[in-house]
Image (tube, rainbow, N blue to C red; front, side, top):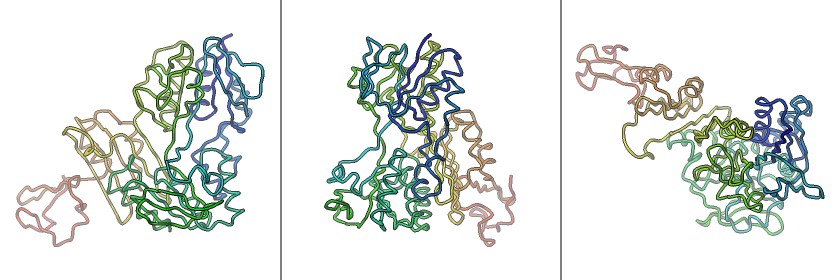
Length: 446
């Protein structure tokens, strides 16, 4: 009977195992992981720190799930070397190697620590990254032990903001320092980013933009940070959330081609026959993803490929991000700022309500939906997910955003809400038609 081994029990590894079992009831499936826990969700890790949930609440699949799917899970097993020719895996502390017919590497990623003076030296002494359950336990213990009062989060991306929110809820004075001139530069345009910043600050979290951290201050334990412009900020704990790096060491040391990630073809096979890779560790056509939608999409393709059913080719994954912060939902998908893209022909439909903190923006090109930002009001989310890269009309999008076209009954001038900063109903009653100077009441919705 054929045996497939998966290294890694993260979202990519676990869903690959599930998809293999869905396609084939007989093949042997075994997972090796250095984790101490079965598959758990990383999204809610920050909530463990603020005691909103317990460690056990994170675990998605308990032992029964693995038994039911006939998947053998090996916890606390670190794979240290692969011998592709012999089809063998060597496990730390074990003499006998494991053998496989097909191997799938779901090695995931590790937090990126930028080149900040003293950062690596202070890891565990007040500097932490958040990636695993163990990390949350270490952070909680450090806060309790040192009675920490001030926290700095380096990085204003999705993970950094989610973490800042939970750290603030743990009664720490919280500051986010972000290298870029705006929050979520990979997900938001300037207007929505400014709106988000304002909302986060209402929660009492301080945001410092254009902040390049030069040095972690402290001797034996952290006392703060110093920025390149000379500013200093005090801190009892520093959490670095500055992106991720693909885990490639195992593949690299085993002679498998790597670059920023483990290089794969359109069927997610590596440079070594019968060895595949999936998830955050993958590089395809010079691109890495590091997002859950890519892991889910790739897990279906690699499951089929490992079973020899090479019908689906990987074409890359449209960037998708969803975040809940300060009680508001935020979704960003595809191209959100066409000004960064080459060529013309882009059409933008936008609805912004700063008072209620709602921002909706849909991007259209050649009658195809190319991207969206939905902040504070996500009614349009299911439509957007269904219609991405599909043919849509401007009228359809206007209906979804509840934007309308008004026409002056006197001179025919139009007020198109998709092109205006103010909705028609919010115009003052004494507003006049710019063309014939008739009052607002002379306009009709068409």
